Length: 546
Image (tube, rainbow, N blue to C red; front, side, top):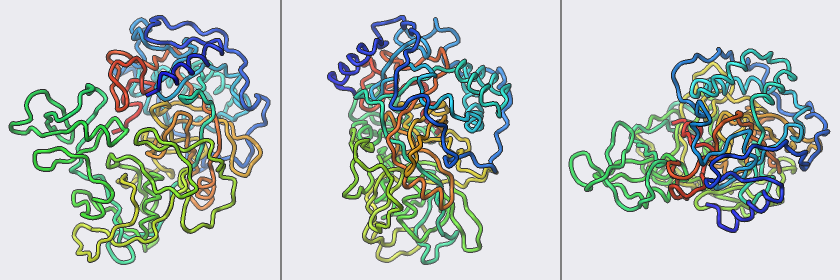
């Protein structure tokens, strides 16, 4: 949560800029004046992105999007602004608003560097893919997506006019009011493996465990301690009353709320207690008998990198390719083994890349065999990796992989016809135009304009992307992870990509944002009704796709 001094600094900066921050004490959001030509780190006359920038795969056809049906669904934002909470901010009307981790300032499109030069047709397939999801969830997006299908997807000028008509651009700043953050890259790795356990393929790749339970903590009160809980299917519900009786389990909220930064906590049953799901070390020591083994690989560190990347390909002995996508995570925070030269900052249990660490990724491919760069982090490799437990196998001398990160990712087979990975939003990722974000500050499915540069290039990289993925390593307000695709070239570009950059999120005009006060979701680190929201939007589907 922001400290009082941080909030005062944000308020002072906003006032100096001639802005007014919407707050619960201002029930009527103030209409925004004409956006000033606020200068950015780079001018609007910057050159167009170079031809060497990532481009959509020519093999990936643009998704066909039918005009969304006017079926009953969630009205988000409210059908009428009169239905909006009195403590809400309105996109396109409120000049500046804030959450616990970010501040958002309305910007004219003419002041967004590179907006006029970007070929927006390159991002159009990714945006239409988001429409397939958001247009079926929210009434406001049905209208936007209904207009989108009428646009010529090859006409960049028409697309630009569409975005300027339907959306407002807000620059994202962190809780210290800094506009610059970190832009990194990721890719879909490929490693050798087998469907069968046979040395050297001894490390199991697990699917989602069927004994994993889920607790949504967003609507929990601020109470802590031991409470009663019941299990319905794979969902846990906290109950009032004594911790006794048939079907009642003991749940220690103090324990589980301190483990994961996510809204959804992963649990398991042990006797009459509900406990956090197994850590990496516990899974390696005992195996995961309640999870299907999808394949076996020969390298524990290569599997770990695939878990951090969130998807991957396994080349089987007969040459066939097994494509895997993210299925679940064990609920424990991402705590990587950082190299001695890595510089990060922490917020509670969350680790964020430091924008000022002096490592801009411009070095040539690192030949250091003791560390590897993954999604911007310099990770130390374990000195030795021993055998791990495997369900149905007698393993002597189980020593573990040597990886100390408690977080563990489970996969599922990707059987779609798409040639690309599937992101958290449930749509294929488009190289160069899809990004992974921290969903607390950047909602999934929304367009995001990025201003950065590629490693080793003097020309700026300024282009429209779409937030379609997340990751346990992607934390921070001004934070994006650019998807580069698959293959050796994509791997080299993604590993080297670590640059300073700025972000502008495009919000539908009239969308209710930054709702706080009574009734706002409660999440770890915040107090219900504290007056400052933790998330940009209150709807849970924007953040979770469970």
